[in-house]
Length: 585
Ligand code: ADP
Image 1 (cartoon, rainbow, N blue to C red):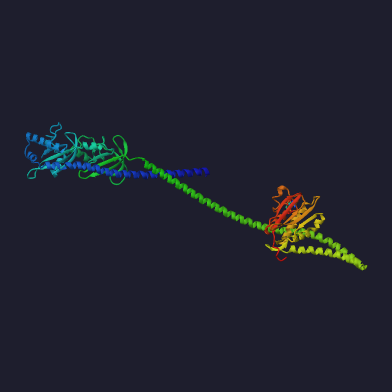
Image 2: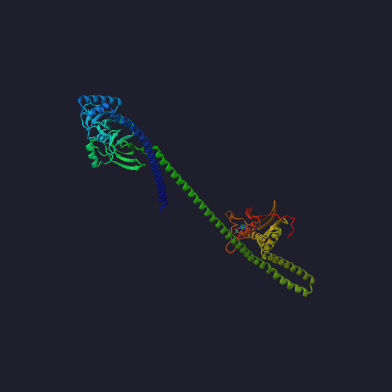
């Protein structure tokens, strides 16, 4: 998968995570908000229920008290005359005014209204029979009755509370009824934003503080319900259309979120109910939930923020961990490489020292052969001459010839002596006390033949003794390399001047080899100490001399350097002076 696509996928995943976190948090916050709302609704509902109960309680005792009134009981004892009715009407009217109930009426044993407080109104109850009303039948059967219904005569709904009127013998002779209407209550409740409903046992709403909600059935009516309603004419001719509702979420008993086909709109309501056991009614409080409130939005934003912070923190830590691992790995790799290279270099250096030694040996053999052959031939001739001189008794001349022979033998012994030193394997790290000037002498001795042959003028400015600590054979090897290079450089030059100096500088002895060979080309100055760097024709130079010399001087604690001077090159190095007091080598 291409990198850009993968990156895009990661970004999308992170964003999707943020959206999910925000949604979950908002959902949770909304649920909390709804639960809080439900809790509040429960408290308010209890308050409303209390108001309603108090209102009813205030009138509950009224019919019972009036049922004991001797005048009313006397009136029901026998047939009721017009005068009695009038007297009853006036009395009930008076009591009704004082008690502030809606209507008071007195029914005889058959349910006929024989007196009513509203006798003056066209909707007067007087003369109407209410024997079919449940409150009457209940009263006749049990002594008390209560029933909410729309007035058959007045068309005004109300709560009928009734009590049996009995004669001296305790026989049922009629019912005292008080009707309560709730317009004031509905009016007071209407001031609220909350929607308040009261439904009866069949689920029919009969009190509502907002228009359009009254006489709606909260659940489907059975045939039996309908038959009962028809016989009691409880809600008279009201259509009782069902109110469809779909519960969305429940918050414990009697508390849920519902989608309701409200009279004007379809809306979600937080629906809280409470049973009023005495009346068999249910009080409902409906509230519109606070959707997407500030808190909910903030919760969503906070969750998304936390999610993103966590993701970026995770990414940051992961990146750091990965970087650490990569660094660790590359460090290990580097260490391994350095070790490998050091080993390789060590091997190469050992090899180089060895091969330069071999090369030097080869050259030395050639020089020796050259050096030794000539004197040997001369000596043979001198021996023959000596023999002749002795045969002729020329002793003095023989003596002279012998001293010449002696000289040459001494020189050959010197050469082989040097060879012996060279052949000795130098243990690495050897630090003998030696005189640098003597080392120069030895090297010069080895190259003497070539110097003379090429007519090189040697200028020596050596401080003697110049004590240092080191390995004589290896230092001699360095000097031979430097001098041989100088001779090579001056090979075709008309002026051949080789200068070797030993100077004291501070704590050091500095040895310089200066020639007149034209110097080192500027672009080569940085490379002359590189192994295998050579400007000499193939077969003449290996390019190892300076590299090995550099290594040897370095090992002894010095640094071999090169520079151009006048018409040639200067190679030099310095070594720490060894104390004078040491015993001589
Ligand atoms: P080689 O002598 O086999 O070439 P060296 O390591 O001894 O190897 O020298 C490397 C190169 O340094 C020589 O090829 C030469 O170009 C340069 N060089 C060394 N000494 C001198 C010198 N005295 N003057 C000029 N060039 C020099």
